[in-house]
Image (cartoon, rainbow, N blue to C red; front, side, top):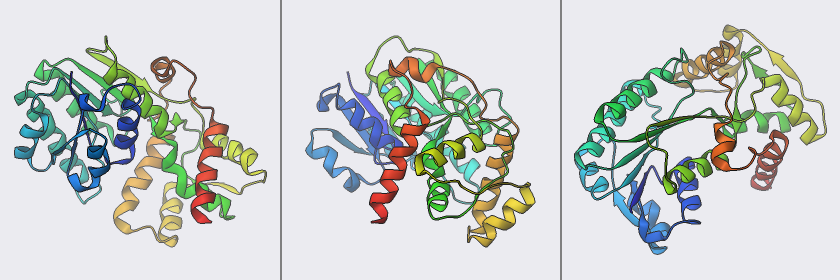
Length: 295
């Protein structure tokens, strides 16, 4: 049995690899990375490091060769035309998996990808369809929202800045990457996950509820502002956010406000075999990490 994790030096992939190494021998694990030099540490621990680049399909044939279970971690492309690039990168990975005759594909997808109007969903919907079309058994891991995505706002709040949002009463299923990674590793190392779809989410809550929990953690009241999209854009511009990132930010706010991440499920805790880390404890972890980094 050989498992391969793509994007293994990234924020999620590295945590998936570390979790897998707790349960499977290193020689059963391979990683595919654009820059193998960044994975030297894994190589010294007995993990097979392969060079694979979603932008260079020819590299993926060798990277995926002889693999039983493949984890395709969705691209986090942020260049101009990111959706088209992501679509092409995912298609390259799926086609290479089919050529390599891998026996199982796990893919990190988006909430309710096949039905959602959330602006990110079309790329994931297309990739899920491409994987299903191969006939290879699959598992779609529809990750809701990483709590780490809010680190910038949490840092600002700790420094006294107001929490600005245009999300209204929209709910989000935040959880730490660690929990998503552990659930992913459980699928890769386990059995019986063929042709499954998991909606992976923490307890649904609004931005206001998140900030209220953060107030408890910090022991102080935090200024909180609900604004419209136009005001949000102007505030982000004033904060120095590059112009190219603004559409993605405002689309995220709009998507949350319109219910794009409001997908209720207990799949995450089922895969973990335990409750998702409660929000207060998760925020305590992040606040502690921020404090250590800043000191």
